[in-house]
Image (cartoon, rainbow, N blue to C red; front, side, top):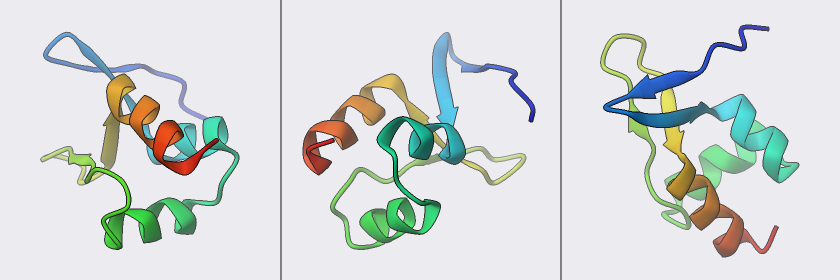
Length: 67
């Protein structure tokens, strides 16, 4: 697995798989929460289209999900 850190504008971003691992959830759960607007919408990398979450986003998701 690619373990490179993603840094954009001096901020560290996390891939969906990393966020799911921290929260102990499946990717579909994260996607559903985003679709239902239960969590903030992820930043999308314009080149790859990947969803990326900042540390602040991850902390907010933890708080909102109670995990």
